Length: 109
Length: 121
Image 1 (cartoon, each protein chain N blue to C red):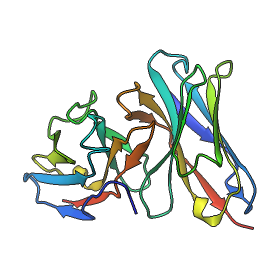
Image 2: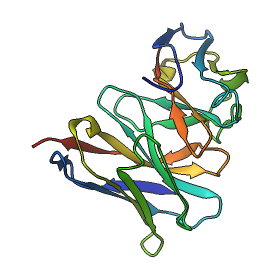
Image 3: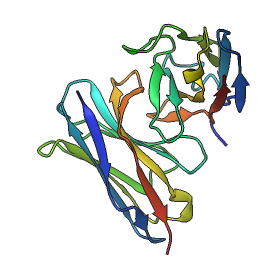
Image 4: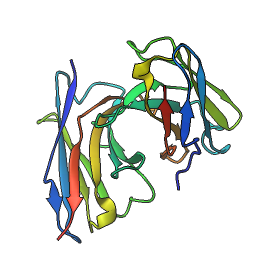
């Protein structure tokens, strides 16, 4: 059982927006601004999409955005494109030099 | 362009120790404010952080694996390594090495392609 809770699946049509949630506790998501999101296509290594809750690495489209409210972080993908279909994982610093992952969400476009 | 490449045995026997190495190219492992880590993914399952190290030798471990894991760095070879003892079938996974951007970030921004490790007699 993962420390952070994500919905197993999410879906949307091309051009639509979809939001994936990541729920933790005040000891991880709620306690630190160290939430990251990763995109993983089948057979590929994960790719960092969002870090420190809202920041986008260079090269990541601005269609991807992150936010946090209380113990829940969210990844929103706007203007869905076929290539956005992938697994998405959230992570959060959990204090005491520990990092926890969510169980992952399969996004279908 | 920074690249990471994992290497190690693809097959390990139960109870044995796994040794993996991550070679860093296109940049220095001693770059300030970058850390280096290992993450694994069992077949069909999610990601699990294993350990992180700074080039100075500071180490950080997943509490659930702490008593079995050692991460180390060799700055002369620009690489870092992972040892995992007492391997069982539950340790069968894809093992990734990655660069962690900054201490407070805890975000892995560059990943290796991964190496498959199977535990079987």
